[in-house]
Length: 69
Ligand code: FES
Image 1: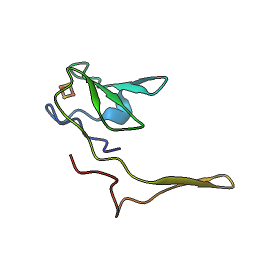
Image 2: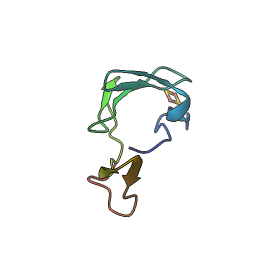
Image 3: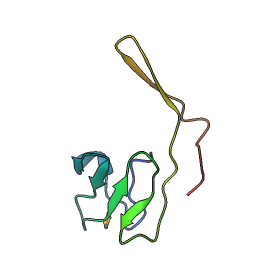
């Protein structure tokens, strides 16, 4: 999913991952990394992208988001 939090631009890859949920490091909004849905406070949805694993490589197709934000 996108790396930028839709709240005020926090960098989600600097956040905290617990199971499928990443918490933004700035104001603690939470997103499901498998769907892009905001689980708290629940008002936004981030685009997610198709991913596949080839050997030791993880390939992300950033040209074709699965859904728009
Ligand atoms: S910038 Fe992510 S919760 Fe505020």
